[in-house]
Length: 382
Image (tube, rainbow, N blue to C red; front, top):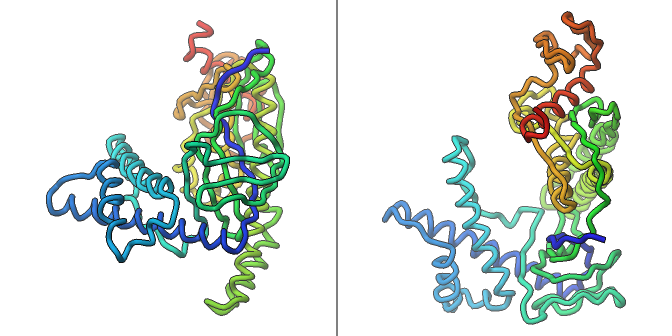
């Protein structure tokens, strides 16, 4: 049985007491405050002196300046690692901003955090056994919080690297662990597959297998619209409005959870059955600019599916590859290579090649072309 050391995530729901909720809320607030303070300082320093602050400089400023001021003494009440990770997140946002500019993109500048954000989280590091998971007792011990009741639905053995405590818009609390574990590599085989992603059908393989699109947004569309209408009629700031907001958030969470679970099952099946998985490098951000398709594209979760396939193939020592997004997979005949520009029209689902008279299903033909092009790029065929 072959194994491989990988980093996996394990997420559990936690049920903090009233005191623990207050401490978590304090930590959220302190992380937000430090993030905003350092962002403002970085902006001011660049405007006045054309200089930048490294993440080490920012962390030293937090520990040696902010924490020592009497008016900010409450920063000492929360987990120090949470504040440090908040600073590092700011540095990552800056690095990503300038990296994307160099790549010719037009990214948004890092924004100040708001207490009105419904989705909040903070990250703490594992050190000196400060994080413990008691599976038999359904308890998790976290820094500054102590032992918290949790629903530990699956166990693991490995080295915990850090933990992220989060609160969803519906008011639920979760903790996610990044753990270094020994992954059992799935059985090897010699199958290869090309994948074409779609809207009518979520996924079509080069073998002709079709996986239907559940279209969850459309399934719950009427119920969601009804809840949102009720929310819009509630008085702002009232308790009834907050109750209705939670109902809307819970339905959004339900849709997201069903979609993710479905994608996990699909990606696991594809990874287990194939040695080489070849997909398209889709420009999803560009595609959703078409307002007629944006809602359907978001509902499919193409980006999440590709992300799952990427790391699951890596875990199992298999190959994942994305062909160039400009490759005309739908227009080429997979038999003779004839290019049919008429298939740019999405309404054309079947066509006959005028050169070799081969009948093509649009999506299956695209999947075969993706497979062939990927194998050429990888040097697996001549």
